[in-house]
Image (cartoon, helix red, strand yellow):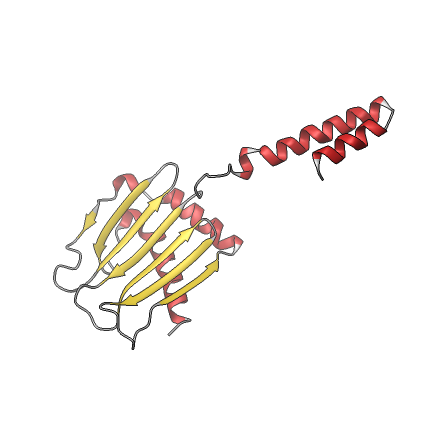
Length: 173
């Protein structure tokens, strides 16, 4: 309801009780529309999580990335160099409420402080590299690893993202 309309309605009622109630409603509507819980215009997402892989020497789909930005999930894969037999793929969907809650819990449970920046020798011998990148108000971290390595400090989060990536990739073969 428009604040001006509420104000006009309040002025038309001559009773103090109704005026007080109208002022209370005006105050509450102002609070709801300007509340920090709603998010301020221009603010970034609550979290961004990226997981993907890259193979330097490869035929077919050599690159893939899953990006979760709050509830929006985008999966992309491509060949290197571009090959008409392997056209770029992009899929977007939104997290279900239970997936969103699981992801938030996994982000809170991950032990980023004890994680190394690099595990193994990513893509040194053609075995590929994988990464996990997390940006939240509390954490900004990128971890690189050998393809399919599973560092213990971020194991559950990585497994969740890999399952999601596989699901989106499997639906588009």
